[in-house]
Structures are given as C-alpha cells and as structure tokens.
Image (cartoon, rainbow, N blue to C red; front, side, top):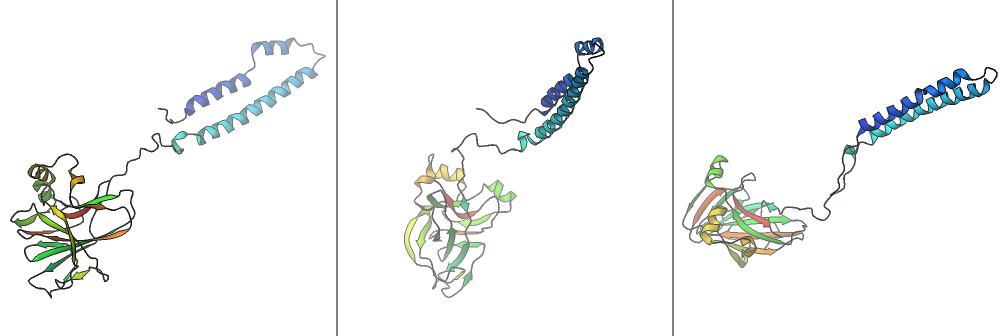
Length: 262
C-alpha cells in the first residue's frame, strides 16, 4: 500500500545545480561564433549577451525559489492520512470506583466514610459506585481483578483472606440521592437484585478452577448494558468468607472494578 516518504531534497538541488551550470557556461559553439562574427554587426552580439545575462539572473532567482520550496515541501512535517481508515482500535476501559465505603451489620449506626480499605465478612459489606460517561462500548461487567502473588508482592499489594473466595456476591442496589460518601448499615442502599457471583482469584487460577473458556468475560452474570452516561451502584458481600485489603489506584490493580467488554 502506498505511503508518504520524505522528499529527496538533495536530488532536486543536484538537478537544479546541473541546470544552472548549463546556463552559466556557454558551449564552445557559442564562443566560436562570437569570435568569428563580423565586426560591423555588433548589435546582434550585444543583444545575445544581454539575453544571456537576463537568463542567468532568472536562473539564479529560480534556483533560490526552488530551494525554498524544497525546504518547505519536506513531507516529514506534513499530515499523513490514515492508511487503514475504519480500522482504528480503541481498547476497552477498566474503571476505578469513585466510591468505596463499608457498612457493618453488627454496628448498624456506625458511620463509615469512603476510602481505600475493603473489608468483607459475614457482617461487613462493601458499597461501590462508578460515574460513567458516554462510550462506544455498550456492554460492561463487574469482576474482581487480582494480580499474581509475585506481582502483588512486588507492588506491595496483598490481601488477607479465609474461607472460599469463589462466590462473592455482586448486588445491584439503589443509588442514594444524597450520594454514598458516608454510610452506615441503617442508611445503606437497598438491594434490588443479585447480579451474580465472582471469584477473587488471579485470572489464570480463575480460568483453571472455574473451567472458563475463551470469551468467558461475556458469559459473566455480572454483565450489564452500558455506554450511556449513568451512575452504577453495587454491593459486594460474602456470607462464608473473610477478605481484607486496600484498593488503591495503581498498577497492578487489586480489587473490584467495572470493565468494558464490547
């Protein structure tokens, strides 16, 4: 497929210099005729000489203008159109939550503010919220994102857990009008429906233990329609496990995130 390439400036200058030399240096035949011209007819010779000088001046001006054009015409600074129109690929996004806040059933009046600390237990639930803008992707899902033990340790991202971590519940909940910057068990959003369960495991372990196949993300029960401006609020709960970690916005990710899929 054709593509732009820088103009060969040195070739143009070489050609210009050759043409200029051809003008500046008269050939032998012209010199011979000049010396053999009959002395009385000097006006044609002077006219020819004047035309030659004029031609030399024009050639010099043309050379200067051509050099300027060559410099400005270097294609490296020009806009290069896309060689593959319509094939641009925009990767799906993974969104970090705008709110992470705890609520404790054993302490129903205890207020918790949004922060990075995540605590799941029989009495503790976590509430997450995302503010989504418009996107070309119209399908999203909620899932855990867990690094390998080696990557997590290298980034000082670890977690404490007990009990099974393969059935952590993801609930769709109401969105409080006053926001979710602080909550107690008594003021927590109300559950609407169970979206599904996720496994808090690194991806390779998740695929191996749950026997996932290619395209498993599209089969997750926590998948939902997106792509428009919206606020998504969920509750993360675990009745038979305990899990504690810090969800911090850095690489590698560790926590529960909203991910675009298609």
